[in-house]
Image (cartoon, rainbow, N blue to C red; front, side, top):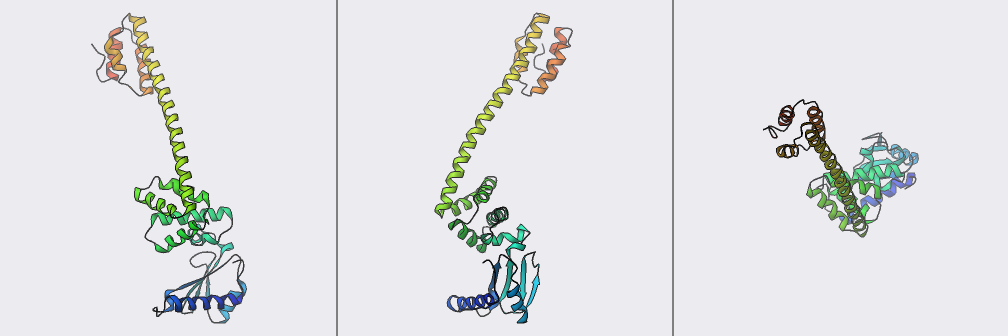
Length: 267
């Protein structure tokens, strides 16, 4: 909520005890529950009431923006969204964040940690709730989706399973897969163009060597053509061209080609 008043502390206690009585009557100790109060700004009035009742409020535990409350049979903490700085502690409260940059980062970390530790039921429930209610930034989901493509198949299947449980997730998954398909086609075309361009330069360099042999020594041995085709590295082929151009006799040229191709091309 935007701001917590002193009486919100009592309301939180009442709701927690009622929840325990109705749903977990078999639980003997209240320290199995954690009561979290979340406020956008510093809840001075509520923290003051806690202190007046003998509770100890410890700031910055485990990080800025989180206040641990000790002295009660309940485990309690107060989270001040405006004071959260470290994404490693704020991601669990991503559902409450409103600032786009901070929320997107928290959403990403939440999804990433769930992907890395799918056995954590608390994370799974929180992520499931956020996806179901469309509370996750699309940009964060897209980043995690792209990251998952580099992870083991089991991780990708886990993410797909999460998306498939809800219409919002299904829509995003479909969109990302279509984008991936288009990207794959684009990369394939680009790779094909680059390969074609490289092959063209290789062929041009081979022809330059063969033309030199024919014009300088009036010969173009067939075995040289085959030997040059074994070289697929353009820089290596260019270096060979420079050395062949320095040859004074056909034999010298063939020896240079032989050394570069492991003996191929030599008489």
